[in-house]
Length: 325
Image (cartoon, rainbow, N blue to C red; front, side):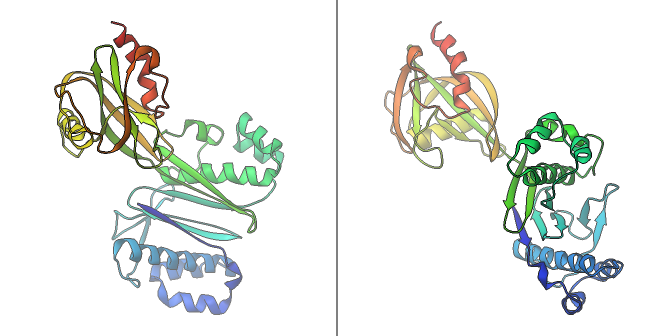
């Protein structure tokens, strides 16, 4: 779970607004805000606290008004002293304040559109990224997108800006998702970084003679695509037990598991998939499609005649060899 809140009505920054916000923050935050000499720094410090308090109340049932005491690590990544399981990050620029909160580590960065100087561009971006910025119709937007992505990843990892700016995005672990939203009217970009959910599933490669059973997905965003039957493994469940349970739920059938073929790893946009694949034969002659639209027994030469899910299609070369033996 995570939520992002963006506040861009910074025209409300005024001495009167600051006086309204001061009584509603912790003493620690009040002292921090008043150390800023300029009005804008005071306002963003107080307003971001108010936004964070609202999000914490909404998602964690902690009453608004509860004092939030901040700790920071050696690189400046913030945490809450009394609520260590609440993860958050704050960013602001002259055009917006952004706060993200979650039950897992998160990172956020917001920056206004500014055309970068050539020296800054070369220092912060690799050759591919430099070309993206230089060839973009709006270079300031392209630079803001890439810069906020890098900052958001640094903030998620809690490492601070290091000397790997140019290689950061290519080297970002695949289990980290980075998303950017552009606000052209407000002239800023916002990027968030968060760990992808890991989804562990089991899949049955059911063989009948020289054919394999393919099923057409009947629900969700991938409806109509083809897959090998199976589903999510429940916490602590044996892989084989999960496979039998899923096939009973999906096909009302039973199988004999011959052996585990492989464990496949695949990154979808929203999650990382770990799929344990088992070669099986049916012990029941009949099956019933409870969740799928259709099913086909495919020989080796027809394995690519259907539109497979992106992860499942990676198995086809191995399965073609199995059917040929």
